[in-house]
Image (cartoon, rainbow, N blue to C red; front, side):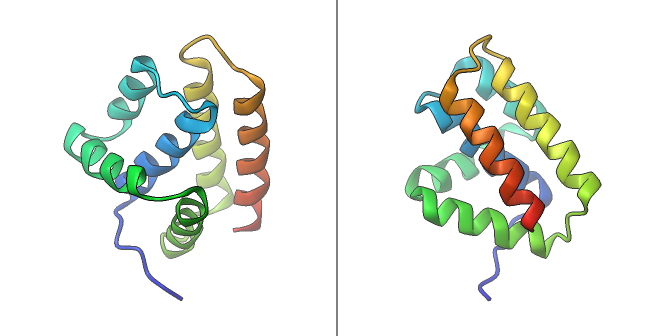
Length: 111
């Protein structure tokens, strides 16, 4: 299995960016929330990597990194709470975000 050399903060930033882009637009409020979870430099570096990846590559990296960091059910639950907060931060929880939340919830339970 390929390894991903992300810190936990980098993983969180990537996952939140992945979620923020579920509706194909990343709002200023969503960016601010992500930066409140990780430092600005980490956000910028991970954003560059995120922009270069397609969805399949992103999901693969996320799943590998969750396993490498040995995320527990409690860790995943906290992560899902952060994702929910992200989806509601711009007061627009549309159908694509709802579907992304369901999909990530299912996917992370497998990990």
